[in-house]
Image (cartoon, rainbow, N blue to C red; front, side):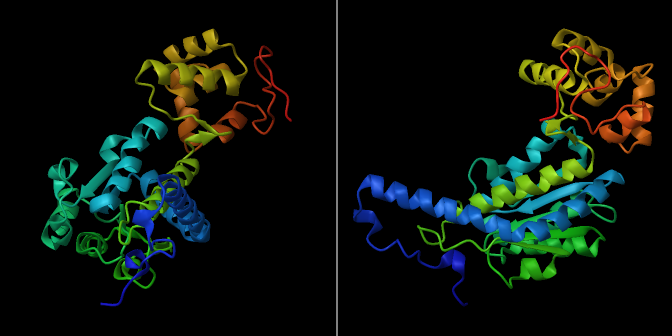
Length: 316
């Protein structure tokens, strides 16, 4: 098997173990920064992938992540954040990691070769037509991830492959291939480092752009967050206040009236007759706040709200 970039030796690796601690850490930091910069080259493919995912979720489909080892941890981190940050229902997200629940305790290497487990995981998650699966593998050859994408394709799901080596099976099989061609690792083959960093950034970008397409982001605010603790309830009130121009006390009252739904509370501030009426307006606007505000006769393109003169802001 030919050596891949993720297994090659980094140019600064020779004599690494006898360098001063500060020098080692500087090399490590530089390698992380270098790995992060390659994500820019993948922006067009990430954009295509986000459009596909948003379309599937918007039509009632599910989003699955499939990976092994450190790539599985990157997938897990992204997937678990989606409900709280963007209000995507947990039942619409599937996390398929080689080794199952045991991976969260041991992260053993063996399960990444288990193709039968991968196929079963895709089937058990009910992934099929109308859904989307993201498979992540630094090498691009991990049997678990490759089999997951094959099985998802067979069952009619859209597929996205994320890998750090070009021309690999994972990328060749995917509907959208996201190549993150990171340099060799400072510790050869330790893809939890540079490759993992690039995967983390790409997944964050992918899920965030998906949320933008779904209408869960407005002027940089997460207007579909799930406010299930003190910090997030406070954040929700501040978002309602910032977008609507109302005071935070009034924003908190509107949130209570809306059942904690940020977009609904903003529309109540904008003049919607009731929470039910606001929700209907949102449905007609595809859950997007900007056209919903327009439907109520406001100009959402202006920073200064045309409702609520208190706390009004001016566009910079």
